[in-house]
Image (tube, rainbow, N blue to C red; front, side, top):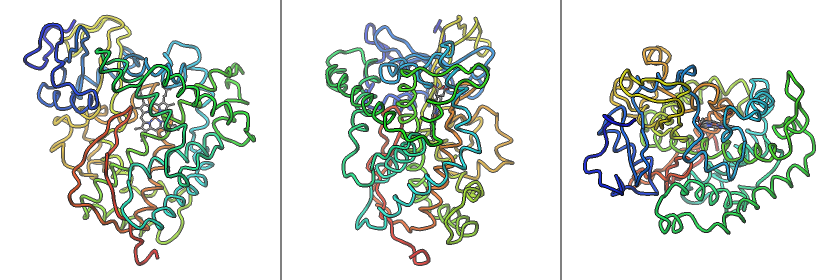
Length: 451
Ligand code: HEM
């Protein structure tokens, strides 16, 4: 029941709030609207009305696992055409969710991170080799995507996409981006708009085939090392011994390649954007790298020592959480905030950039300030004010993987380069499933001390 929930003025019969809605920037539109309308509001396009909740107090209630759980709907439901019952797109009640979650959990333990470190280091060196050789500005998001795709490919599946040797993306990536866009845009109600932006069903079928064929090839070529794929193929459930079936393994492989790289790439790109816009903060982050790592190549245990570099990433993901939201569904009848009646099964979207800008938890929210994540400052905030990795049992399984990889890579580029910025660049954000800065370039120059 959405009575009493604010919406934009001027809602029209039939089309609702359609005017001004841009299919390329749904999240940024929602952010602008939410900043005016407050902690809860609706947007309606044709007959379809969605409730958004961006206020920390209400989100704290929504994150209560006893009353709410993950809702697989909207964009996520559409993605099942690509990733089936893989971890991200599975319903919590599907047996394969728990089975895969329990089998894969050990692949994300601290012990497992230690195993991935050499691969992450190898890929970070490929990035610095590419930047050493660059004789002009580099596209930061494109190169960070090369880094994160190679990392998940090798650490997860023993597969090399060869991203740094290619000028154009690997065919898997082209197919993946198109298939994700196709899935997302199935929510657009006007067929001609949908077709114009999303492409044809035939193209979509070909794209999905490109992805599944590659995954099958990788499974075929497996050599048996300690990676995600190996775990899925050889391990049973720790309690029951039950194994994952081949179709589910394929769904998980696609899920991990998709979920395991775009988000981390965006986080690294936004962090570099903000640091190069704030030279005094960059100097502070680099001073930490110099003090802790010196000229050395970082060992596994050196990575977590970069506390300030980590805070820079945390703050970048506050302003632009690269997985920009999640949905919550009531598991019983509830009255949200003592005011909004929700029946069992009703759901809302939590747009994270709004939660992360709620002024009750984040004073001067637009300011980039990594010190917000100093332990003393963080302790003063409500626990649910910062959720870039989602919430509850369906939160991100790859969080430690992403953070180790990102702190390592950011530390290494700060250790090695000075950056020349393009002073005319203004932050522009592209939305796909994730957020990334678009057209953001830097000119890296090897520092005197690192040369
Ligand atoms: C789930 C964010 C990196 C694998 C999620 C969710 C968020 C998120 C918000 C919950 C989505 C929901 O509730 O609907 C991020 C961010 C990352 C990142 C911001 C990087 C900065 C990774 C990496 C991997 C990964 C590196 C794999 C190696 C997954 C999987 C799920 C998930 C499999 C679904 C978990 C489940 O429902 O059981 N992630 N993620 N993510 N993420 Fe991540």
